Image (cartoon, rainbow over all chains, first blue to last red; front, side, top):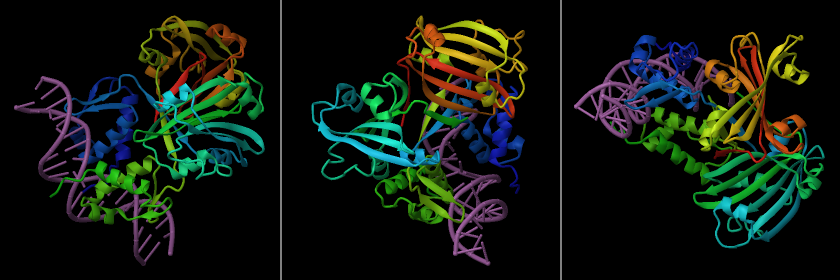
Length: 230
Length: 230
DNA sequence: AAGTGGTCTAGACCACAAA
DNA sequence: TTGTGGTCTAGACCACTTG
């Protein structure tokens, strides 16, 4: 009963064969069963290794069709979407927060579209500024479903909506977009930069099943970089 | 021998308990063995389900320490890093490509730092423009290790360095950063936008073991959005 | 020292898709 | 129809960490 061949080892060996072109792009590779015999392990071990490579985009697997090396390599980059306060603190800075506005209003068309809203029911609009060591860091412009977070019930004066929502609400889906936009006069004033400056921004919507929860635009101070490792 | 309870079912049930706070944030949840008995499946099935939830950031697992609900939810967003040509074609547009420069020069300090280069050996610098339906789409400014891709050997006149490298080279690591930057006069001219316009940009470095391969800055035309689903 | 997750095995059956 | 991956099981041993 050997127990020596780990799935990581199998993964490494398969990756080696892909990289050396021993397994050509697009080509079909041996069955799990054959590989299990060749490498001296159980089929389940091979399965786990190849499944991991498929998740990472190196392989394409289909029942009956077999396993093929991906023709066009697709690398996946993952970003951790954290609470802004955590983001600041991980940079070794102190997080500050100021609620600037909290009112009830009808969302603009773009927001209604992103949230798939019909009609003109008022939503709760929140605007807040996040600080890092007393400098502006990020401007948060958010619309919240008042049925879920009534204005009378939850105040966001000390805890940001960003943090409260992440900690207290569950969501099942949503969209995320990264882009660059020139600072409008309002954002510029709040972030302490020149109007028209290039800002890195994130648009995010979240849903609970089909119920829209919130839409937010986060505009970061010029120079902000969102990094990850490959 | 029942075979009815799938790991997806176990995952769904665990997720339900997390969402309903039946399992409180930070709290320890039952052992795999107990859950297996309670849910009527093998421990391996529970293991796979909980492992999936841990990968997704919902749970934290430690040997002997047990499994805990994550105290601060961290959602992971994944972006597929594809070839630019694919990106354009997936938008239903036709991809065009023009090589603008291909020369040998010493990289600037910022690039040397990102690639961990010492000395002043010349590298190969490539500048190219990617088009979508005859409009500017993305400006590629790249430095390539000449030891890996000699200027005499590979021409990038018809195939972009982006595509050639992805298809023909393997890398083992690197970094990726997203940010916003104002268009400098050169980029502006090439992308057909006003100088100072807010451009979405990506910096990327790739290594093969400890050998630097390439560093590239991709500047996208104003309005570009990088999207993903949560 | 002991508890808990991590993994491997051998075998079985199932689901899907290609032939 | 049939080949291939997808998954489940029961049992075992191991590795890490905490008490």
